[in-house]
Length: 113
Length: 118
Image (cartoon, rainbow over all chains, first blue to last red):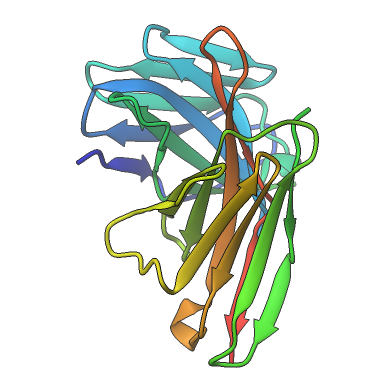
């Protein structure tokens, strides 16, 4: 059974700092991995999607990497801003034909002005 | 971009009553609708997957007679919590899945519904 773990559970940083969020998964047989952002009491917004054949994806100040063989992904946020404060969720889509996603518990990020 | 409208955003109901949550894909047709439940500091838990015109597939441990899912069209899916009890209080989120060409499959999430059963 695929399990996704995110470390740390919470992170508080001063504005301007670069930071890394970690995600690990137990079964490397994945179709892709996605990073989402969730604001309090809201739905999820997709940030980056990495296909299993890819090593990284970038969007603005965000960079996500994938090491499928070791079951790890990182989300790098450069020059953090208070507006980046949210919960970041990692999800994998396991191979096998289903479109179901398996989520981690998330990392709650607070960027202090 | 793709938008899923989820209503209501918040609902408070009395124990024993039923509550219906609605998700509409506004500018695209959702092949599949995924329904999740989220507890504080926990992962999103997939409850069921529904395809238009067919019965929903429920995950292990989810009571299908309690959580009724209807996917009558490619743009509308509903989740009805029947005979709600305080332990059903949670945050429910829908996610519409669709193929977007070149084999790319995308997910668009609703904004969630906070259910409180008193």
